[in-house]
Length: 433
Image (tube, rainbow, N blue to C red):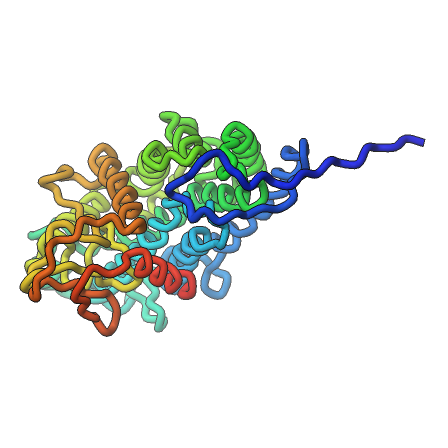
């Protein structure tokens, strides 16, 4: 009768392809089937997408409604937690996935922006009396625009004059942040899960086997588009998943696989130009008309984002709209407040765990991808410096304090271990979801 040769197995090489300064240098080891990468790598596809779909479908009482704040706030926390899980995996090479670490904080603060928008709508609107609700609060209160008397209350009128943001723009902001948060996760979140799980199985990042990694990635793209086209608009034929537009994603992944973190910044171009520009800022053709109509106008969202990221109130020195909320700018903390370096109560311009967006430095319009994309690339590189404890601390004096975010606001009288702070907060984000 016919007989088949037994597969040949080899011990994974632990020598690697040179020192990677962005790796924890933890040897993963393991048995890898020689010559079986194709069949083995395809076994990961369904496992990766099971993780993504679990979060995508996580809604309150299993009902996903654009009005239900409980559902999408819960999902936002799960998205943030997943990014933290990817980064905190014990596999040493996962530490190359700086985007997952930074995204955990970014998504967490998107959640705080959702809270702010919901609280604002509740203050500016009224308990639903006519028509469908725009927002259902966690306690079940249904909110809709004012319908009796003046359509603008005093606070909304002042905000509209100062910032161009009123009830309609805030509603558009809330809904598009929800949609954008999920769109990034279904696209780049799935890619990050794939990178982490592939490396855990094959160690190709560690061994410098870039071409083989990319070969499996291309089949992963084909698998997702064939099997999940109807699960989210990013996966549709005209969606952003696996996009070749600009060559950003593949150039970034190749650099990431080779241990070239600066070169991997092209992934930010994919995130901002291919995903968010079309699924949050301007709503491209991949977003069906009925979905687009529920997300408000592009001009309303433009006003909302520019107000959120650019308007400075209460002497916040460029770090947010209030001392309690610092926008969706780069701040690496679990709480709404950032870890803050001050002298005599005045914040330094350069912060170890925050990277401000200032219009005078980066450009006026945050919704312009040519303005925000270079800034986000700077954000990731700032994250890398902080994680490596490479921040250039000022000379310490008694009046120079580093205020730690959290309920106790501990004052530290000397440079702290930034990596320890970052990892502790990532652990909190992981646990919260």
